[in-house]
Length: 56
Image (cartoon, rainbow, N blue to C red):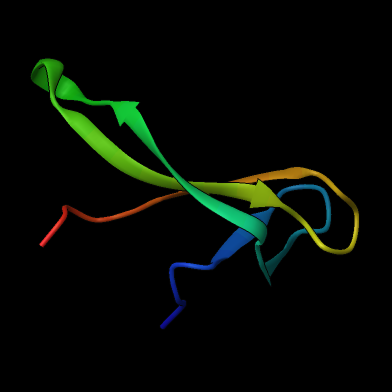
């Protein structure tokens, strides 16, 4: 299972660890807020994004 600091890089077409990971809020259905992790790919520098589960 992938950790929260890993995401899929669309440019490299592979799962990689996120460089400079930062948790950001994102709009969800019904006006709720969802969590997401964003950062950059260490190999090509493309922005990476991963949607996280509900806060516990």
